Image (cartoon, rainbow over all chains, first blue to last red; front, side, top):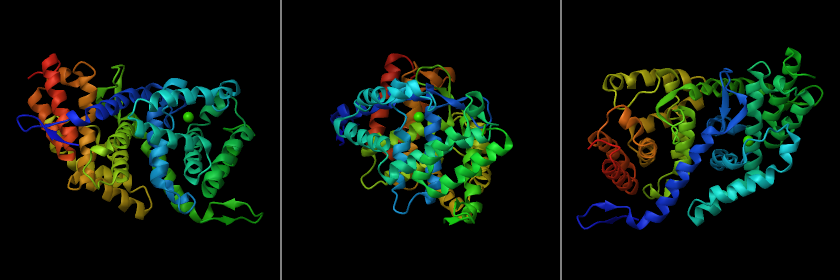
Length: 209
Length: 209
Ligand SMILES: [Ca+2]
């Protein structure tokens, strides 16, 4: 809503409260740029952060969308991917092969979602929280395809950095194939492609059998 | 399209050529994470890169969308923002107050768009290129709103880092207000808000009058 002040100038007064919350949220989420993941950039130069990772997944949804099941709402997938890691501002990045951290991950991430999405006006808190819950529950085609891209991305990065986190953390192909199963749940084509990548990685000696 | 090999396993063979191009593009755009902008993160700890910046703008479109003109296609705005800086992989980041660099910026960026979007299958090259052209031409509400967010973002960052790039590059309020005009073109509310921020920045002494 727009109003004008005494001299006829547009002011933000009536929307002030909503806009203030939205800007506060915008500034707060800048912190996602400082949450580091285990994997590096494709050139190996440094670790990747969650914000640039989320951008990369959004881009993957844009160009790989045809491999989602017919009828998948790709705009929703993109929105999901942009927000999916925000909880890590408080809860940190949990390495998927770290069993102890994975155990209380859900609880830590829910508390983070309460706080971070709670910065927004109520209707937007509800909307983004629902989107994040949908991603986490993995029951819709959108959530499953989003998750598939989230798992395909580090596989690509590891494959193209001579094994990357696989080598460093002594991960074997059986462990990677459990993630490939999640990719196949979201996209049959990308699941098949990921399986081929794992086979090639083992053949090249950059992933333990 | 899905087929199965001799032992009945799903293979990516028929989609191989498209998928190969899409994955090549996905890997190539990783380079956007290494293109540094002039401004820093909100905490001042380091310079921001284009990939995390693009993510941040996508998030701003998600939460500030109600300030776009009615009928604006926000999903299109988000897609535009995700791709808008890809050309900087080749053309580099052009500082908006650097007149010499701005002069041949358009030409360098068009060549970059040819190469980078050209990595994709033809139909996708055309689709993403059209989206980027639309953003650059700034004639649709979507392009104007996307541009408004792109200009609001550093203004917010500078305001919350005691002047940031303004102080370092001796920018004054008249120069900033030219950018604010672009914000107002995309969103009356955000334009008014940005004007208030500039006035406050001058009053606080973090921006030269
Ligand atoms: Ca994650």
